[in-house]
Image: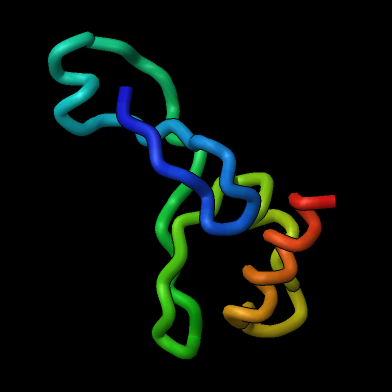
Length: 73
């Protein structure tokens, strides 16, 4: 199973597919995805963090930083 840390909350997040699943034949869904924001910056976020991004405007790197601040509390 391959994992990657979420750029928002720093939680290890499962990434479905890839060579890790090839050898173990382990199933399961992906728990996050890479996002490219309107300014061109890229982040890997878990689905819980993606849900916390603003709906009424384009998300910014500052919004991702705010996710990290909330995770530390």
